[in-house]
Amino acid sequence: MTTDLHRRRPRTSTPTAARDTFGTEPRTASRAMSTGLPLRAAGLLAASTLVLTGCVSINVDGKASESPASSGAAADEGFVALTLPEQDFPVGTVLSKEESLVAGAPFTMNLNLTGFTPEGECAVLLDGINAFETQAVQGVTAVYEADLEAVNTTGSAAPSVQLLVAQTAGPMEIMGIYSELPAGCGTLESDEQAGATATFEQLGGLDATYLTISDGQGGESALVAGGRSLGDHHVYGVLSGVSRGDAEAILQAQADHVEALMQDSGDTV
Image (cartoon, rainbow, N blue to C red; front, side, top):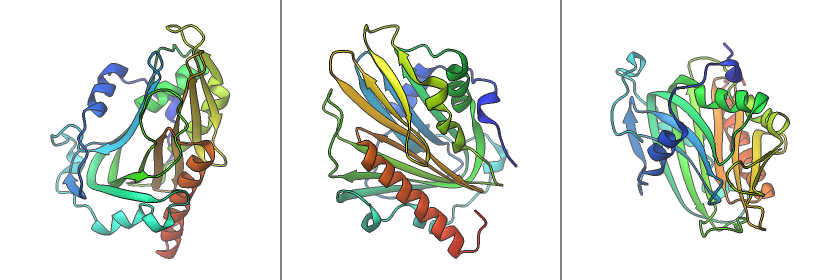
């Protein structure tokens, strides 16, 4: 089964509502397990203040999903092995890693730009990402704290690395849409801040985009969104304030790790 993300109808929820939902999620110091709660990936951008934040998260609503498919679902604890091990982190040193596991949850994605008004194909692509929703059989997120060099020249937020692996009931091509953003969007000019731009660029051979926002006064912030679909397994990452080279190395290592484990278990990629 396949899906064409950017031809789906946009969702009715607003970018502001999505930002509030993800921005208030507390981080936990230990692995969390839950059933029937939303599995979401988000990249949220505020151009006027050049604050780039993103998250991959579960259990953000604190309430059970109403989806019948989530009833009685149980997560396989072995699924957490799909997250990139600390010792395989290709750059820097991992200081901490937090994991969360979920089963039978809706899987959605968001990539919202504040201060820009995308048009044409760019608007269609972004609407497609924000409209996407499917049911995840199970999923796991990992948040890493690592000693990476920050590339943001505005604000004081440290580099952020958040990775998600989700399994769907059947093969789907979910992540390919992120490789369409560079051609579909290119560079956008802000309609709220003079001289501010948002530039979408391809991240290596991954289905991911490297997004740089400039305030027009020498300040820049960066965010990566995307990953790779491997049959019924999907790797998604949101990395903010991370250099292009480091981001590509980390996301590629996560995709390679999942692919290797799938092949070892005899799964078709």
